[in-house]
Image (cartoon, rainbow, N blue to C red; front, side):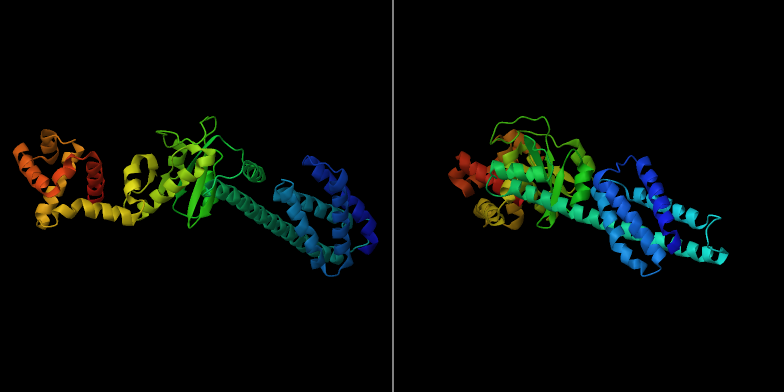
Length: 373
């Protein structure tokens, strides 16, 4: 085998070069030198009959290079196969000094050797792929964290983070909070250039709004939930924040995150919901202590009534407030007689007094009773 070293170098290099050219690769510069060194090192290790595992790091690094250069691992495996055929063609030539027993031993060793090289290259490829994924995840996490931090980011920092993450900055975004930590999968499911990361145990997805022009410091009124978001997140608890100007992404993030928490507690319905459809609930449930106090204050004048009477009077007052103080619509809403409503209202006026005529008090009562019901 050592006597065939020169021919093996020549034949294997020619065959591997042809295989790489067929794949559309350039063999000039560093790639050409790398191919030559790789072939010579692999052939020398094989014919030496020594410890073949020492060649593993070389092909592990070749696998990493394949991923960095955007090739598929199958491309390198096909080059290895072509190289192995070239070696076998050379050693099995009729002019070869090897006899039948030698050829059998060489064939077994060659197959094992190529399998080992292919395995080392595949490991390197997967290692590089994993490292690259971690790098992208880290870069996108930094960008999203910058967008949703309490203070708006400086332009230079924002543009630098976006460039590193290779994410074109849109004029407006929507931030979606989703139950689960499979951020990359969820971003792909939503599509449209969305990026995602895990923040405090839930996934935050930033969905760009391409082509939208908004004034600074504005929130888009009445924005409709993007259809791709609804389709991509079907079956998940997810809250879609309002569409905002890019530098106010924190507003969309805070609303969607609080809405997701309310979904998880059962206050808001499951599925994909829009925050704009539940603003009153978000307002009253934003700070639990304040909301509970608002409800307690709204019900306090009914404390002396029996539980059954208190429930009926509270229900009547809420319906009356919803109907803007009109008795007939209130009676229709409650499916009861107007005289019954008037009777209950006299009791309510005795309990609440002038608060029922004060617009601010009416609003507070309305919110407190909504919270109670």
